[in-house]
Length: 271
DNA sequence: ATAAGTGTTGCGCA
DNA sequence: CTGCGCAACACTTA
Image (cartoon, rainbow, N blue to C red; front, side, top):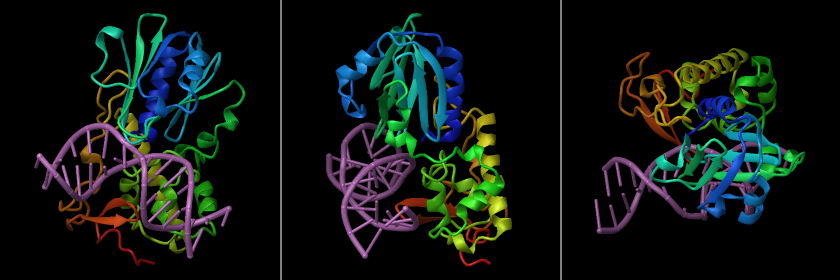
């Protein structure tokens, strides 16, 4: 599940490897992931030169000389810099480059490769409505964003139009570190708790990036990250002892997603 | 072998 | 508008 740390690392590595390269060919094996007809997509970007790679939340935004390539890996996938001789087993999309390398992209569900014409990035609804990157807000920003809002804290954190980049994997550790139950109503959070949550989010995302991202994902070069299960604290560790107090970690349903909590450290009705 | 669980996003509903 | 449940259908684990 690629989330902000992995996407930020992709953007950094793609910036380094691909800026200046020209797309010499495009192969589309799964047209349903496009937002325009396949012919339009291929015609628009073939011959385009890579200018800049940035990201917003879980989206990669590639600016080319002929418009924008917008990538979202959905619930999982790979972007691999390789060559035609070493294509991975599965891929949905290949961009051939002018130095005999190619970019092979795979997503196993709900991934997108979208196109927006030059200067029309704002017309791309799915990226235009995203909130600020989770790493770009200050503690004061977060408190202001939560002010007067109803609902549960976890729903807010996962809502990409509020705060972009956090998914169900990276939401677990900050809530644990801040001692906040995922279902806590937003209006019951104290300023101190919000400040603690903000710090825990920053720490978690930066810690993962410093370790090359998630250990379940491959980077641009096909290498696994080193941010593994040991950093999750309670996430995906049902039945194991809480690292702080030893209480058994519980898995609970929080809306349509699951959460892993220490019932001792993250009580629901704390004040 | 068959079925359930998973993670993201947009949409429909109160 | 806002918060929340659900559906989209690929792949792994019970």
